[in-house]
Length: 424
Image 1 (cartoon, rainbow, N blue to C red):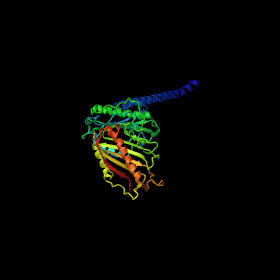
Image 2: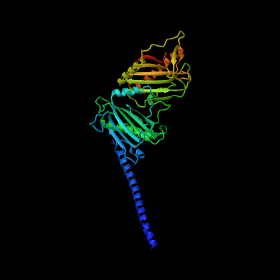
Image 3: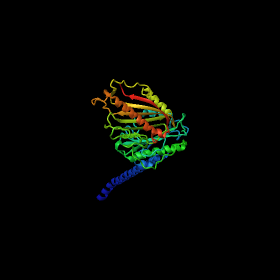
Image 4: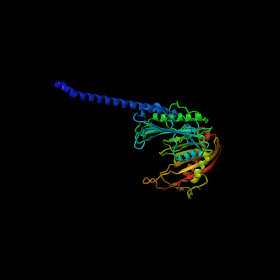
């Protein structure tokens, strides 16, 4: 009887424990099912968001199941009745951090008016344009990719600028320039570890977005290929448009040169640059850096006005005073002195300006304070050689078929004069 009484005393506890275990198991199962359903919903949103332009298969590893994604999208191509600077602006993010989402994807396509394009190019002035887009681009299209750190992890971005001869709808002012930007998350710990495959993914997403916009806008731009094999970023070898820039043929400093410049022809403007930190013959302060720029049409007028505003357009500065022995005295600092040579042509995009800038070998600064200026005597023969180098560079630039002037069918060229871009 005592055994029966003991069993009766134990039974309610066992029953309660079993019920609790079932509740816990049921709660865990419900929780897992809820997370699975949430992730399924997030994946479905990823596939449908941003007009279906996101690379969903490649981004699935960033999609969580512990919270819903946040989708923000607008633009005149998503809502035709909407007034917006953007044709398409879409951001999808997951997870909340202290300062930013855990992961974020963004696509933006904007029809830029001429003033915006000029402002952007003015802001980029002096920044080397490296041709690092990992896909070949047709004429009229320029692009680049980059990587950046985030609070946690990193991201990769790509941008494209496409010329649309037929114009773009969605802005009150006329627009013939499409600007596309893409931002994608990366699993790399820092921006320096982002792999080439992530850059390629961002580039292909930007191309797919540009093709989607131009096809629906019927703006006259040819589709950009996305199935081409990636090509290496610009390095020691110049791009095809900048292959005319040959330091050996021009008898510049004999050392390793690095180059940057346009990878695709753009009838509005062109840019090529090369430099070396090494020094070596021939004697007489050899050229260690050279830049070639061209602008046509409205961009030509805007560029010339910018140089005029700072007093470095042709005819605005008298040559440096020549001492009795033929030498001149200039001041050098952290900003190396340059001799610029300007020319004017008629090209397929209208009147164009060309600017060649050459920098001779100088010991800039004092070492203790790079901002400190110091006087340097330049012999007359060295100054004449620098002038001859600038003219030889301009002549080669104008005469080469694959250079920007060659592609733009420039003719009737007039040399406007030199500008000494150094303090006195």
